[in-house]
Length: 105
Image 1 (cartoon, helix red, strand yellow):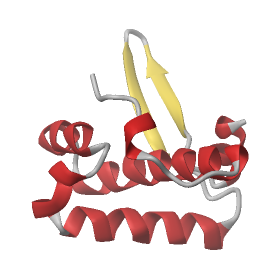
Image 2 (cartoon, rainbow, N blue to C red):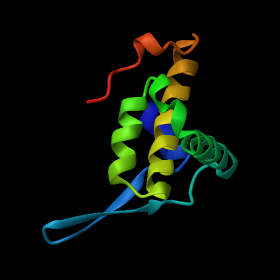
Image 3 (cartoon, rainbow, N blue to C red):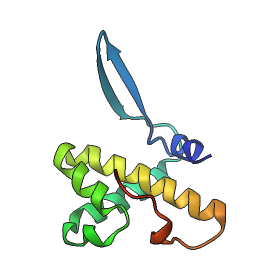
Image 4 (cartoon, rainbow, N blue to C red):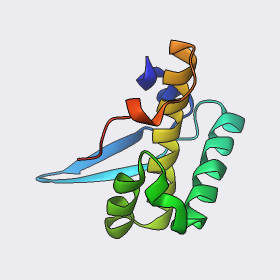
């Protein structure tokens, strides 16, 4: 179900494969434009405040991803993660609890 929400907000990317090389395409323009904009802007606001990343439940993932991804790709990946967190909170009808968040690998 969380993947359905991500598809509706169009955060899933279409892979382009040529031979043995796979390239991730851009996010599509399908889905709810306003909701996608809100998640992207929320992700960009989190990325601007790098001093508080350790305090967040996904802070270790964010620090590791920021070393290997371009800032726009990182914003889309974080927006995807935020959309999945929002779906889980709404689906389970409870508040977000950082203790239940899975640890980054």
